[in-house]
Length: 388
Image (cartoon, rainbow, N blue to C red):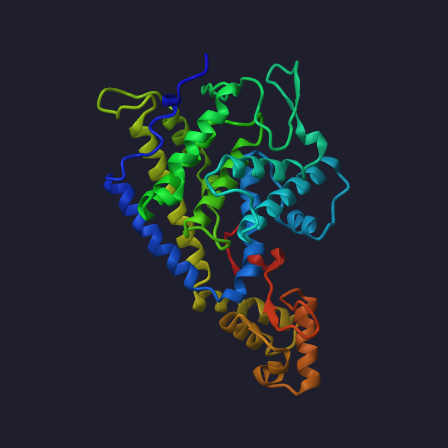
C-alpha cells in the first residue's frame, strides 16, 4: 500500500513566523545590495570563480576534497594522472557545468518541478566517470548501477531516516511541485519555501545517490528563480562551513511531530522552522560575506597590493593597477583607451596590456573585443581572502 501524501506535511512553516519573515526581508535587501554593487560586465568572470568555489564546498560536504588549483586545471581540460584525483576533477567539472546552465537560464523545467530535479541529476551524473555511478550498499554485497535522471527503484535507509518507498516518489514530488511553485507564493513565502524545499527534497530522497548535490543545485536554482540567488554567491559555502549544524538541523526536521503543540502534520513543524531559520541565516551570511569582499575600497586595495608585488617581481609594468582599477569600476574598456588610462604611449601600453593578459588578470573575447577583468584561482585568495 502506497504511503499517504500527508506523511510529508507540513511542507511549509507558518508564514506568520516573525523570525522567518524578518530573515526573508533581510535577504531581499541584502541580495539587492549585492546585485547592485557589481558591474554587469564583471558578473561573467566573477561567476566563473564563484562556481568553482561552490563546487569545492559542495564536494567537501560529500567528503571529496578537490583542491582549487585542480578544479581550475579541470576547467582547462588539464587532468592529473592519478585516477582517483582525476575522477574528483571530473566530478567538480560536472558540478560547474550544471550550475553554469542554471546561471545562464538554460536549465530544464521550472525551478520547483520534478522535471528540473531529474534534469539536475541527469546532467550531473552523465558527466562523471562510469565508476562513480556504481553504488555499493553498506553491507557491500550489492552493487547498484545509478541511472542518470531516474528515480530509485528500491528502498533505502539514510542514517536514522527511512525515506518513502520508490513507488511513492512521483506522487510526493507532484505535491512538492504544487506547494513550492513560486507563482503561487508571495515574495516572503518564496524565500521561506526555498529553505523548506531543500529539506523536503532530501526527505523524499528520490535517487539512490546524488541527492545532497542535487538538493544544493536545486536550491541554487530556486533562489535564482525568485530573485535572491545569482552567480555571485553560494549557499554551499555556508552549509559546508557549518556542516555539523547542517546535518543536525536536517535530522531535526526529519522528526515526527513532537507533541500536540507542534503543528498538525506528520512531521515536526518546529523542527522545520528551526531548519529554515538555519538555512536562511546561512544564505544571509554568505550574501554579506560576498558583499564585504567586493566592497570597492577593500577589493581595490587588495588588487593594488597584489599588482605592485608583481611589478616589483618584474612580472608586470608599473601603472598596471590603473588599468585593473578602471576595469573594476567600468566593467569593460576598449583597448584603444589603455594608453590614456595608464599614461603610456601606445607601444608601451600594449606591452603592459599583454603582460596582464599573460598573467591571466585580464581577458578579451577577441582581438577587437573590449578588455575585462579575470579572476583566476591563483589570485583568488589575494583578491578574495577566505573564499576557499
